[in-house]
Image (cartoon, rainbow, N blue to C red; front, side):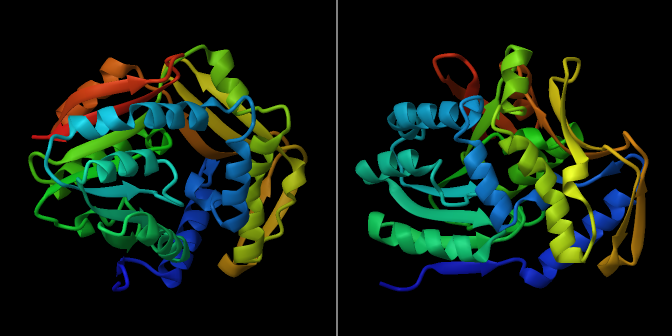
Length: 326
């Protein structure tokens, strides 16, 4: 068995440069902000995994229930031809596995490509899946799916790009439009897009997921300051920042912040930047938009995708949308 193909679009040097740029821009802006992607180093990913196990955090359980229960329907909706699957932000490729299994069972899984920024994780999941799917071509893309969609594999058969986990909601409205247009440009007519999205529901249910009783979300949110301390030789005092999650009903968005609980002067030594905080001053650390089904389907249509199906869990908390490029 030959080694899986690996396409390297960025390396540690690129990631370090992006971290420095993000931190400098965000900490010198008014208001201050830090992109959500900075949370996800090794410990941050572990904290997020712990967060998904909290009873209040419905997103992961609801989406996985859909994918588990509807995998054969999803596979059948793709038609009878072989399919090459690419998963954006794949991680351990746990979310997409029921669909891979359904395609493999019917003899239609031609290839699988996890796409992620973590080279070690991409390599590990390819080695793991080589045993599970010996008849499928396996390759991986190490890159940023907001920048490197042009590197999608150009298999001759139908391609299915999966973007699961609700990450789509972490983009701003403009970022969502740019992403969808870039993805459509990278695909051929007839290719498929499988999108997981958090749906609008009772705000109390939504906010509880970002304010779990065990405090894991708060620790995850503060972790970005530990990342800057470790990677940029900063001297943030994370415990002196309060985790805040606010619901905006007009935009159907959760806004996550860190609020300074005392005056602080922070030295970010690696950047040569000093940052001061007044009591109550906030760092915006990310958003999570929730969607009305029709609104999201209209956006897909406007960017070159024909909505075909939408599956929801029994409570209607999460949606998995299947659309076809036209």
